[in-house]
Image 1 (cartoon, rainbow, N blue to C red):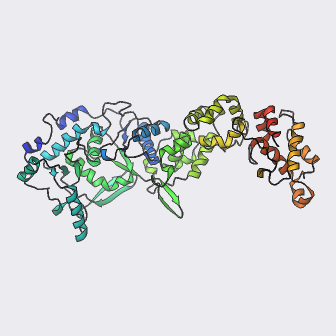
Image 2: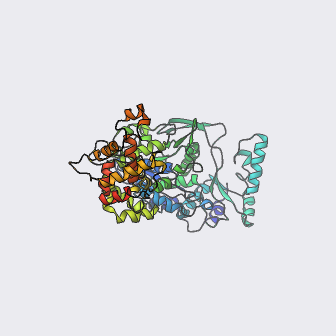
Image 3: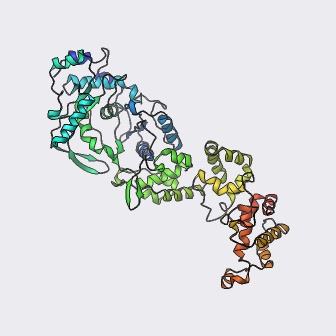
Length: 547
């Protein structure tokens, strides 16, 4: 065991004691049963939708128990820090309404909440472990580590720094001093109390009892001494921060299950009470005949930015994710499901399937419940960011936009559900706006379904000549039906099917001409309501555009 004098020489002389930090961050005063939870993303890349899922679970558990939810930025991996990641985190949390009670932005008595600003705290506890002989400096170089791994592979030994492979574990003090005097860089390793072959168990609040091999590796807890800023590894920072921030429940991804034995060793060595863990299963994707984890590399829908850029309403996404977490919530109306508490006992151990078709349907159902004015309030900021040209058009034609959103959505038991997300607006409603509607001028246009050009022109001119605007006492479609009959179209579909050569087309073909001229498509909303929204002048402008 190294002398206290040598150990203390490795740290600033004015480094506080553990008691200082325990006093600085005292136990919280909260109601019985209140949970203190956290979400702790690493800014080494963009935020995964699974992160929003886990953050929303932590937020829900804290709020429904009368506790506290905090956001901690785990940026100890400075080499992989990605510029712009923090801004994307903020955008994602804001979009989905995941507001932390405590963070570097919101404030709080247990900050700073960014790990790179907590270096002094970590060094205090690293020094304390070294003083107790529970940690030690290791001068193994990256090249030596690579050679060690190769030798372990050759002889069939398990990889890691342990036993005979841990050459600096019990190095004599004079050898350590010599390397320090030479200015050689080093890491600090935790002296694991684990013994090879030993099994340990713990209770996961989602998965029940889990038994696994105990940790025997002397893991790095403080990074190399030649770094500009000496920071800990995730494992050590987790133990120190979750203790001092007085976290009561750790909810995180299942990839950390294998680290629990190590984390328990660290908590025990530091004299901290162990924390309960709940490990959530990752979101999955159906790929061919099998399921796989939703991949940042392969799947655009893995990124939180995808949902923002596509304009999925946040409530719909959160509702869908909550239904994946607790199946009973998927059976409730959205507003009730969002208000109901999540229950860890109802989480599954298998990764839930993220079905984008299902999410589209959920989103469309939700949008269908919104008044037109509210849709515009949500749509316009999105358009301003992602479709500026359309934003200008819509803002100049607010009344027309409201009339368009009225079509088949108000005063009906089955409102239209073709608007799933804000990115759909141009394709679904763009034809209403004269500035962007492309007039149909060619009677040979394929959208007329091969109808003879003279019949296309006759339908257009006849409709325009006798056009009657929609009104409460107007049998509006009769003008199309009567005109079609005058031009020889079959007024009953079964007559046309029975003898198609006897007619220029069916009533559907005749109506299709008017529909294509007015909306640009054979599939469009109710034609009468559409014409009412457009107004007489615009309807006639479109119908008379044929060359």
